[in-house]
Length: 445
Image (cartoon, rainbow, N blue to C red):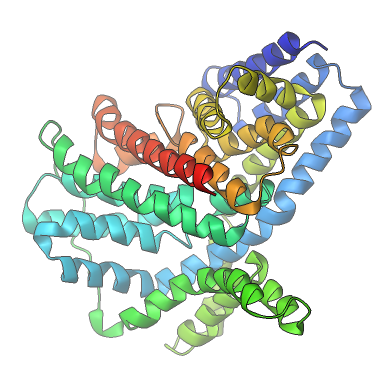
């Protein structure tokens, strides 16, 4: 089929997805599967090929992500139940002081959200923001915007978060470079979108502390040490980084190279971190084995719907790739003179605005650009930079079709208009800043 028809198929598919989710109120999983079928048929794929491609897309996505999400959910839940995340947050607040509590909350969100889903991290940390607001009697906006910015920055840019881990895997990016560039994007993005923007927008938007929020009680004597808690959170990142560093300082034919690659793989790194949290923290602090099993089971139950929707996004991505729609649209953007890094950001932003989910926006964009960049011979570091550009685009301009939009309003009591002025602008600043860092890194590597 000609390029114009394929491009129109891509645009029509995304618009149809928007209609099914927002107006027909169809579940995102079913909508993605229907749109994938339609995209395959209208692009001229053989009917049997469409089904095979859908199976390939689901398996290719969940084959990696299911393990990461399951282990990561258990790891994060154990850190919460044992008080490790609380210890990090409380220590940061104590160190920064209440006057700079907005910076402390942003940093706490960035660190504590590393092993957690976005919504889970917000649920676990929002009480700290409320407690600080109660003591300072200040505008809640100044505190919750940095907290949400820190959590959103970790969820978008930092390994071992599910979305950046999935992006790096799908793009065949170097994981260590993904950590380095992700940190370079997340930290300035969090500062600009969180404490700085939060202080500015608090002059125009005022939110009061919800009346039904009680004072949280944290038994400081029962918490693990701050140092051990921080090491636990960073442990999987250390193992992943050790892979790249270790393989460069030993001889290529050394048996250690294989071991470095083994323990530095995300599967093994998160598994070892999970075991360390169970046996080095939970059981040693008196948590029974039955309680540990209960915590782990409770952690993975909410992950089911996340995996299904993400897998369906992978199906849509694979259909775009195999049908030729992705190459056609990607080549059209490159042919229009748009640099590849900017094209990654623009495509992800467009899909994000249309259908809402950051993860689906990432997967869809990968499907559109991977056929193009796959022929250009980029190295792992450059692919990591492009992954950060995609991640940045996938979180900008969040509005009513994004669950994060409603999550912010639900916890803070903000109206839709107030949420647009705070949450939406915060996400846009964060995503744009991160993407700019990714573009600069891509040009330098």
